[in-house]
Length: 323
Length: 259
Image (cartoon, rainbow over all chains, first blue to last red; front, top):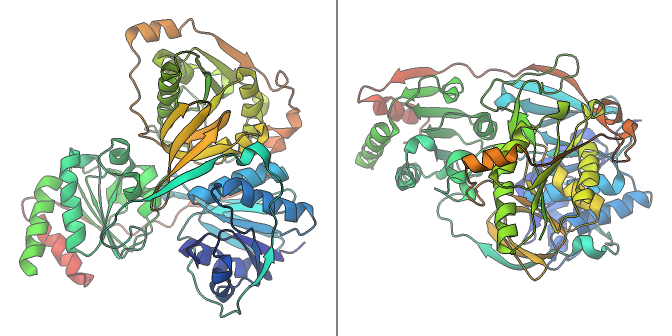
């Protein structure tokens, strides 16, 4: 049975689909003949144009979910459609906070497994092969589902390029949420947006990240200064986020953001698997680390074996002098 | 308040990892340790039980070969007891099958609150806790960076793309915690000694009333078809800093037209 219908769980923020939504829609076009989106929130109508422009012909509109978290109602709306006979062959879900909730809930509602951490997908006859980075990207595994459809894939950001198809605005069709009872009892009381200056970490052309080698939270200012001079964003390894030096929003890696900038500068980062997964796709990588055996050097185009406290200040000074 | 914490015992992440060439699954031989990510959940559970003025922390884990080394670490931190599901039939289970097993085991603990890490350090699947919540018919709040409990409700600061949401949820519920949510305590000598005699209830798939065909390799409806070396990045230039290595970096930036 060939792959026909592909659904994309489409996150929309203030009426605009997030970049990963557009990446998934773009790639969905190469997998199946019909691409449809599932969206929620108060501004789905506003997003229909852009979702159509990237290939969705229909938006299954879950509607405004109010103060609920999306996982349960969105999964329930999809499950209701599937159980009602509207059965996609493939469902693509973004690896986001809400996307993973949707995938987990949907998996149990349909009693179907999920494949997560997908970084590549290709149609192979009647199969879909997913690609996964293993051991920090040193190996690539391919996987596939062997059972009933829909096949639910949870895909990492930046796995595919986003390219418009020039399609017309998608048609909005209501996807009602069934009665959910206590599973949907979590309520958002308030939303807090943390102040951010400069480009966003996952969109910046240059990312400068710091790790344990900085020695202390107070030295992270070096990373921020270097990032600012290069008009880039400041990132961090999981180790220093866990240690509380910088907020989680700076984290690059498996658990944090995936970045693919023109230039990635890793300062005092050893290059654990967890970190490499999130930055290995950068076009150019510079690593500064005291330990010449650090795994980060295996992916660096330019590796400096040295003390970040000596190299980075000189770098900052030199860049300032040129301004 | 009784808290159940899902913990995973994994091969030491510092040791080189390998795949079983026959099944393409991670080799989980040798001694397993408590996943670092789970130490935060254990600590959170202990603190919440202490703050509630009573109740205990029960660990729930699934591991091969009756493995308890990681559980003993968490028991030494202060958890009261553990439920371990260990059965050869579970080898190769996917996340959904794992969730079904954990859910059955968790039912036995009758917890007011279930805590898990957002994802394990070895498998990174990251869907199991939410699958458990759905199987048990419970609400869930994932990616908690702050957790408190009062009047039968859990309040969570949930990580978002741009900051955090303050979320409230009635108990019983499943909460997944990010690393760094609390500072895990080191087990004391007394704790380590006490852990040796704390009860670990070891169960099989049959004990839980689950059909063996639903779990393990035979129940998995997905497979790894092949594993190959990734395209290696062309090896770069390595310089040892003797005081002017920064000039190399500047030259590199110039080459990229970034300065």
